[in-house]
Image 1: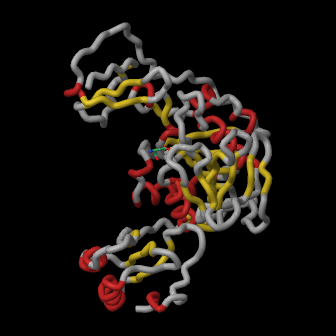
Image 2: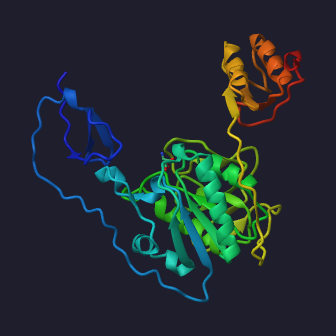
Length: 355
Ligand code: ASP
C-alpha cells in the first residue's frame, strides 16, 4: 500500500538507530518511518535547528528563600528534543529564568545537573548520588530542594529517597513533566512553578512528588514519596496517591495541606542520609500459570528478597509453593503484595495463602 506522509524530518539523536527517520507531523506528533520502506522523498524546504535557550541572569533577592534544583534528566530537563531529536538540558538558572521567569518571584534558584538520563536508567549509583547531594545541600542551609526527574520511574526514586534521606528539615520535591516544553500543552512550566513554590514556602518537610492534580491546570498535588504512583502513560494528571489522600494541593502562590500528619519544616541543617541500596531484591508480578522456575532462578542467582505481586488478596498458583518453600529455607525474604493496587494483602482468608 502506498502512503504519503508530510512533515519535518528531525535530526537523528545520538542514541537512535540508523534504520528509521523521525517525521514531525503538522499536528505536533512525531512518527518513525522505517528507512527501507521509503520509496521517494520530495523536499519542500529546509529549517535550521536552534539549540540555544535564551539565558537571562537569575536575579538574587536576599529576602527570598534559597532553593536548589538538582537535575537528573527526563522530559522536564529537555527542551526541543521532540522537535529536533536533540536533548537540550534547560538547567542553568539563566536558562530556566529565560524559560519560566515566574520562578524569580518565588525564590533564589540555584541549579545543578547531577545526571542527564531518562528515568528508566536511574539505578543505585544515581539514587545514592542524589541522596548524598540532597544531604550536602541541606547542610549548606538551603530552604528547599527540587529534583527534576523523568516521570516514568519518579515514584521509585521518591520511595527510595524517603528511606535514604531521614528527618529532612526542609521540603524535598520531585517534579517532572509529561510533555516537553516545546509543546503547547506542556506541563513543564507549571509543574516547575508549583514545585519551586512548595520547596520555598511550604512547611512540609518530606519527600514529595509534585505534578498536575486535575486534567486542567487548576492546581498541582503533593504526594507522599512512599504512596505515589504513575497511573497513566500520557495524561498530565498521571500521578496519584494510592490507598490514601495526597498531602496538599499547590497553586501558583499557595500550598494548602489536606491532611495534618506530615513532618513540619525545621530551622536547622540536620539531616540523616543513609544512602545504601541492595539490588539483590526482585519484584515478581504473578500471572496465571506462572512456572516455579522463575522463583528458582532468583534463588539460584543469590537474590536475598522476593516481593510477589499476587492476585486478589495475595495469591499465587499451587505449583509455585515448593519453590517458595525452598526460598524460605534458603533464607530468602519473601513478601507478598497485591497487584490490584488498591486494598491490602490478606493471605489467610483462603487456605491457599499458607505454605
Ligand atoms: N521516558 C521519560 C522518563 O521517564 C518520560 C518523562 O520524562 O516523563 O525519563
